[in-house]
Picture 1 (cartoon, rainbow, N blue to C red):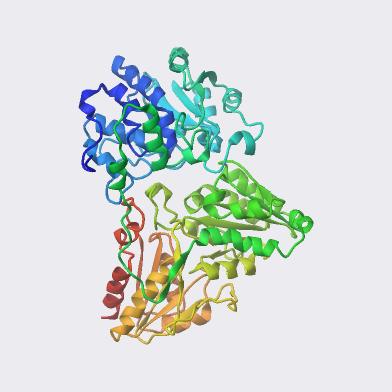
Picture 2: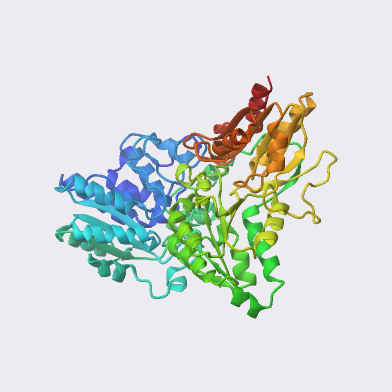
Length: 603
């Protein structure tokens, strides 16, 4: 079978029935597969009557495959294009984005952000019934609770259909949130709630007819196992993301009604990064995982009793993604598994650190930092001790695209000038260990960032590592990796190794450029800024938002000290292109783009 040919001729099927067939054949997540029955019924309702708002809103972004399939069925996308799901520049990212993908009718954003917006749609369309697909994960978010109360108070004709499969990224809500019930929670907010069995089509149909017939906001909670009937992943967390090829092939064989798709899958392979950076190791490490290993090194120095007394590490259903899993495994005495409740979990960590000798540890994705800014202020006002780890910073390897970009992290530095909270972003894995060990028991709020992508270790020009076992991190100090007479590049995090590659190549051409690693992002190192500020130019290189990142501040810092070099800064400026490593050159942040900017400033 050709990779350019979609395995099903969609024109031979009625739209509402092809969902269940095609969802078997697209490389989708288990969630989109789960909700196929209710999606089919909603499409039938839309075809039957104009009383329904004809968009199937969905607050679980990872179920985006449903939206792409609907776009293909209505002719907005050629079916063959679905085979390029999550590829760079395919306009099929891991979450739906309005305006990017033809036929996609809304942006889901981050988990649990859709229902409040759907309330607004209902306000604007009082004569329509508005549906939103929900999940037991998205319903954990606090803004869904607010949306529920508003819908009830204003008697909005909003109908929520919840896929209650007891699976989220890191585990099972019935285990890590004992006592949590989607149905009882919604009832408590005042919604009329109906229950059904998600794999019983008659039960699903009965439930949907009941929520439609009910005057006002109502919810249908559908119980089912995750990825029902799919070998290896049924009922497991592995169904949350893209269904593995092995499991998909086993499922097709089990069904016995499809041809062998093995050859189709073998034609699909990731496009590797062709650029080879100099000045770094071939070996790469995941700093987001090493954060957890570094915390373990600190905890290893305490007895279990002392660790439990002094430290609490709380997860937000992302322990495998943010490095906390290794802490859970090695030091369960300090670990608290929790749900998708970033605001509450951060404040719990802060409350633990309300005692001056206790320390809370909180972690989630950098994109979600924007959700806890108010809680950060409260923690600061209460002099709490919190070590925050925000992984998936920047844009590198962000297949879920723009809504998951971690680019506004300077928002964490929201205290007044008489209060200092440091933002740390290590340049390589060894520096991550050094930073965590140094700042772990410092008081106040500390923020440590890492990327989804792995990064290499930085090498000196003689081939030795910049940050070896003898390296000691000094908070607030900028590190001049190499001096330059023609100007300086200043960078941090995963952009340091790219900047180092660019600087080395410029130096090979005779352009004597220096490089500064700024692991403490938001504090001024007076000695270093005076030195580099008297050079011909200063260029800030970062993957954070160019509007709100380091570059938006550093020029002011220079002028405040009467330093007037040529000044430039580059950062993230565009909505994403999808894919993985391709996000960096798409933003103009690859080494060659840095070299071009250096030469422009040096001219």
